[in-house]
Amino acid sequence: MVTQVTSFSRNGLSDWLIQRVSSLIMLAYFLFIGFQIATGIDYTSWRALHDSTAMKVFSLLAIGAYVSHAWIGLWTVFTDYLTEYMLGSIGNVVRPVLQIAVVLTLVVYAIWVIQVIWG
Image (cartoon, rainbow, N blue to C red):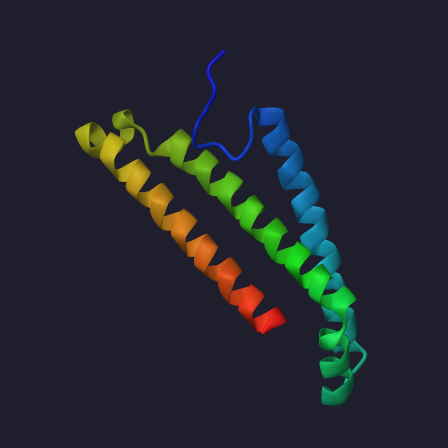
């Protein structure tokens, strides 16, 4: 059995499950935020909500879900569509460069969100 080193998990079923669970976490987070906005929350209540530890953990969980969901999705697109057949001889160079760029971007986003939440 071939193990993909660049994949987020060990097999396709794990990747599929992580994507489904992460999408449910993001859906719950955005529905909750949308509900708060729709009810006409004022600044002091909004600030108190986001200062609570539960909301910080929920936001951290949401950013973790976002990062894992984005990485699995983009890894799949890169491995399916950025092949040597599609890009010619530079395909084996372009794909790793793009994957590194995506990983760095997602790590920077995650660190930024963590700084905003816990800073």
